[in-house]
Length: 451
Ligand SMILES: Nc1ncnc2c1ncn2[C@@H]1O[C@H](COP(=O)(O)OP(=O)(O)OP(=O)(O)O)[C@@H](O)[C@H]1O
Ligand SMILES: [Mg+2]
Image (cartoon, rainbow, N blue to C red):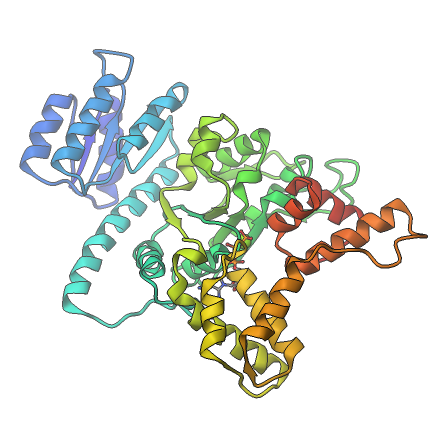
């Protein structure tokens, strides 16, 4: 049964009608008091709740009701309904445990999708628990995600639970911890697996190009638009869009992104007909978005929109037991790729590798293993082989033949060198060069450096 709580009788009627037509069992009530009476006696599958009741306009009554419902029925997903002007109320509601929120007036199709997601997610949770009891086979495809530490297993358990839904996922974690790998796994294990997985690096898109890149443009929409261009949202239709480095998005682009995610429609530049998209959103960042929200550099409503589910990837130093598995995995891949026989590691070498700090996480370990393997040319690798490579990467770098270069050539060389040194890890490269990531991307564009 789906419970509708709203003091406006026309809303109760229209929602009931829509849900009944979709074959749901519905009950509608007008006041918090009636709502609590229902919630105490039966467990609804889902609750649609208005935030503003006629008594007050502050919304306190709505928040209180939500908290009460959560105490009695912590498992039941609640979707809040608020007016456009009261987004901060919705945000409070999300903090108090609401599953999602919609703004009035809403789009029926978008609301149905949210309702289905909520029901699916909750149903999956229950199914999961039953499945675990009966110890059924594991259908989750983890492919090349290596490791068996508890920290990683927890991450995999979470994504296994949510991958079949449409819920938006935010993946956090330091650089090189495998955020992209996890994003791909979410897509691969979803019903959207056969549709596109479209990756967008938001750190690499300048503010001026954002709309044309994301929404596409018609020929002649602006001076440089010499032909039509299909935007990323359209490419990702029916599939998954992976918004990488979402913390790098500036405020004006955040608003534009929020619009699309709320309405599931967008407009191509130069063509004002709105287009519908059906996308699942997975985002990643190594920034602390919560702090950015507090500092007002990241919109709170967007934050809640993109992270219905948060998945945090622990740093490699917090799951050292995975290191030997990863080392063998990367070594085997490298040997295969180069047609080399398999290599071995002395126990001392493994101990050494297990003890390094890895600020660059798994990417750093991967680079170290690959470099050492190729440079040493041995079939058993020892501590000294790794030490030599590890020290080398830490040495200050100099540019050969710098005299005679123009300033621009010198800059280009230095960027190339840093890219090589940090295995194209933009966060580390930018840090090493002392520039921000957006300005690093601008320089890559300027010097035509392809990764
Ligand atoms: N558990 C894992 N098993 C095997 N390979 C992994 C694992 N985690 C990460 N990797 C590898 O490490 C490298 C870095 O991973 P990935 O690009 O997903 O990191 P990231 O968190 O997105 O980093 P960044 O924040 O810098 O973009 C990739 O080559 C990836 O394949
Ligand atoms: Mg990444």
